[in-house]
Structures are given as C-alpha cells and as structure tokens.
Amino acid sequence: MASLTLTNIRKVFPNGTEVLKGIDIGIGDGQFLILVGGSGCGKSTVLNIIAGLETLTSGEVKIGDRVVNALPPKDRDIAMVFQSYALYPSMSVRENIAFGLSIRKVAKDEQEKIIGRVADMLQIGHLLDRKPRQLSGGQRQRVAMARALARQPSLFLFDEPLSNLDAKLRVEVRSEIKLMHHRLGATIVYVTHDQIEAMTLGDRIAVMKDGVVQQFGSPQEIYDGPANLFVAGFIGSPSMNFLKGKLVSSNGSGVSFEAVHQDRTVPLPLKSAPKSARDWVGREVILGLRPERISNEDAHSYDIVVDCHIDLIEPTGPDTHVFTKLNGAKVCGRVHPRAPCFEGKSMPLAFDLSQAVLFDPKTEARIA
Image (tube, rainbow, N blue to C red):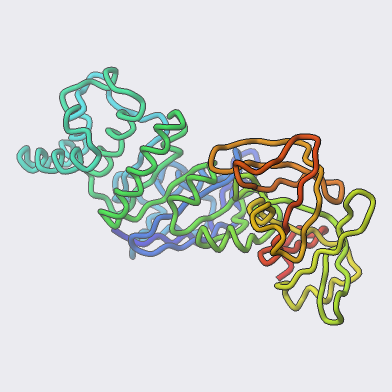
C-alpha cells in the first residue's frame, strides 16, 4: 500500500471551463479517503486524474514516493472499481478475476491461490464458474472488487461503486468494502454523492463543491464542526436546521440567539458559544442545529423547552421526525417513535444548544 498526495491540482477544459481549482489533499498509507459532493463538483475528475485517465492542467500527483503525473495508468500500480462493473461478459467469474493476473503473466498455480483468497473474502467462491449475466447486481460488484483485489495494487480507486444497487444491496456491499479495508489495510480513494456512505466508510472526507474542497477532515470533525453552510447542509440526514436571527447578550457575559415563535421572542441561550460570538452581539447570524438536538426525550430537564405546532410527522421506525417552524424556517426534530405527537397539534420540544453552530450570513463560513 502507499500514501497519496495531491498538490494544487487544477484542471481546465479546452473551452476554458475550470473544473478543479487547486485541490490539496494528503492521506497516509492504509487510509480510506472519501471524495463526496453533488453532481458536477469535480470529484470523479479528481479520481480520473489520480488514475491517469485524465490529464491535469497543473499540480502534482504523488503515490507513495513517486510523482506519477507523466505515467500511464498501467504504470501507476492502481486498481479501479467502476460504477458499471465493467466485467467481460464472455468470461466466467474466475476468468474475470484472473484477467489482470494473466496480463502480468502470473503463474497459474499462484493465480488460483489469489483467486481463492479474494473469492473467500468476498463470499463469491460458489460463483467462480458462472458468467456475469447469471449474477445479481451485488454479485457482479463483488466480482469487480475481487478483480481489483487480485491485482494487489498500491492504491484502490472506487468510482461510485454502489450507485446501481438497491438499498439493501448497498448496505451489504458497503459492509464488504469496509471489512476489506480492515483486513487488508488498503489505501482507498472512494467517490460518492451519498453522505451516508461518506460517514460510514471513510477515515478522511473531502467535501467538494464547484471544484473546491470545502472541508477536509474526519467524519466526526466534519459532522460536529462544519466549515460552512454548504458542508453543514450536505452532511447529515436529515440535514442540519438553519435559523436566521440576532445574537443578544444574556446574564451579563452570556450570549443568546433570539428566536421568534408564534409572534413572541424566545431567547435560546448558547452556553457553549465560542468567545468570538461576543463580537456578533446585536448582529444577524445563522444558527445551525442538528435534528437530534431537538427532541421530546426528558424535555423538562432542559433549560429550553418550546411548545411547538407540529406541521408534519415522518415515522422512520427507530424514531420519528417532526417538523415545525421557528423564525419562519422549517425545523426538523427527532422524537421517540411512541411519543404522543399529532399533525396539527402542539407538543413540547427541548432544544439542546450545546452543539449549535453559528454561521456568518454573508460569507456562509462558520463563526469559530
């Protein structure tokens, strides 16, 4: 396995469109990097540049100790798993897995050992004599992964490998990828638009928008301390609630967020507000609060309990999402699945502001 370093990667298409605007990312040997973002953000272009399938305009790609800018894909010691599986339909599963080994002239007995090992790891040993057309989507993706594993490369690249699978299969294959990473200690770069995949799989996440890395860090760092409004809204399901309002002084040295509920002002004390929040007293801010921080659990043990009109209820099984309005904005909370809540009725909701995040409404950056 090997480390990966991307330094000031830029990509400009012949028509002048700049799709990558100076990407700087570095991961260590054996780390799992997720490139996540919406369609057109540049994440697949970054992956293709790492693979050598796309030329960069400027910058440096380093795999281990080698700068690979000028190397063709075959000389970069990588293996890639595509969204479309890319299996050879006329070959059996065994032949598909062995294809890269045969090209490299690996001895037949060694090929069988490698095929057996990766097939056992991905639980496809009973499928080795079948053709791709005889396999389900999840089985085909496992075969594509097995073919990549058989190469034993320095770097694995995954390009939205679960997009064509149904919800149940996505969970299953996602688990297989995570187990594979734990067993092999492989260095992986994984592209997805699914923030659940990003949170559950990655050691490090690069959240991208418009060819720029908006934030780079661990899943928990990004979830708890989003760098800006885009990251806060993109990571998390349901997404973070955003409320516009003023900061006001409270209890001498404290700070509160001024919320408006049913034509009356409700101060929400920010006990864990950063010191810099004092500079924003009297000014407009955007307050971000995760849905799980708005709940009916032990509501009366919190300092802030608001009697909220429930507009919509979404039962999910383990909990129920309730929607209300505060400061004119839709707000989502999570309550116990057997909580007595009804659409069109009111219920007390507790607001835990210990993890609230403040944003500058002009720059959309977090107020640190």
